[in-house]
Structures are given as structure tokens and as C-alpha cells.
Length: 174
Image 1 (cartoon, rainbow, N blue to C red):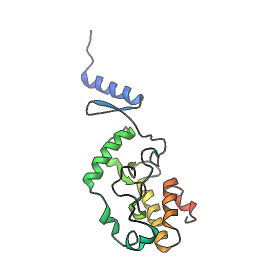
Image 2: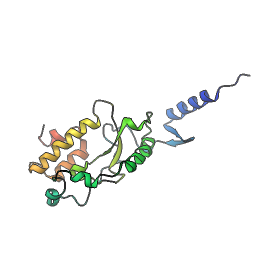
Image 3: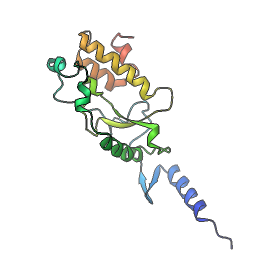
Image 4: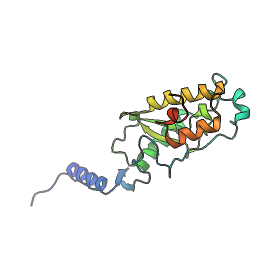
């Protein structure tokens, strides 16, 4: 009776688990707990968005509308990288290379998103037609509109949470 090589068994096992919606990490199988079905948005049951209580319409002139303010609240890369690795598993991404994802603030810091909340951070893919770079452009335009007083902070936050891909048009900014 012929033996199947260990690497082949490992590969076949990983493929079988992936087909069942499971991922293999450090030798154990984990069910994907967050769905990729919402891409380019995060799964709302995992990352519904979370707000920084220090940022309100009344405080925007001393917070988000101050150049460089987000750097004062941005979490360290060691924190976001560790969280990204954990969440890549939770989303069941087949591609587990951390460089292919941006640990993104769903509600961006420049719109008063909570800096370290796991409800607001998620591994956003850097590939596809609607990427983190596209979202950054939307975020910047929304911040400018909020700081110019043409859109309220609440409306900008609601638009980004509802669907960042349509946020500008829903607010009449595109």
C-alpha cells in the first residue's frame, strides 16, 4: 500500500476544511465567524462601526478639523497588525498575507471613528475594484465637507456606515 506524503495530506486537509468554511491556523481549524459577503464593506455583525465619544459636532474644530489630529489618536502598528492577523482568520480569507490588507477604521478617524475598537477595525482587502485606497478618497472628501460645514458629522458618519461606496452621492457630494 502506498503512502501519501505528509505535505499532500496537509494541503488536501486544508482544502477540505476551506470548502467547509473553516481555516487552519497553527495546526487547528477555526470557523470563519465574519462573512466576506458584504465586501467591500465589513460584516456588520463583526464591525458595525464605533465612534470616538470625544468627537462631536461641537468639538470638530478642536479635533478632526485640526491638521494632524488623527496622529494623536491613531493606534500603534503593533496593535493593528496583531488585530489584523486575528481578524483575517475570523473572516476566513484564503489569502493570509497581512500585506494584502489594510487594518481599516470602518468609521475613519478623520470622521470621529473609535481608534482602538475592534467594532471599528477590520482587515480591508487591498485588491478588487473598491479598495482601501478608494475608501481613503471618500473619507477625505467627507472630512472636508464636515469641516467646511456643508455636511454634519452625524450625516457623514451615517453615510460611511451605510455604504462608503455611495456615501458621497447620498450626500450630494459627487
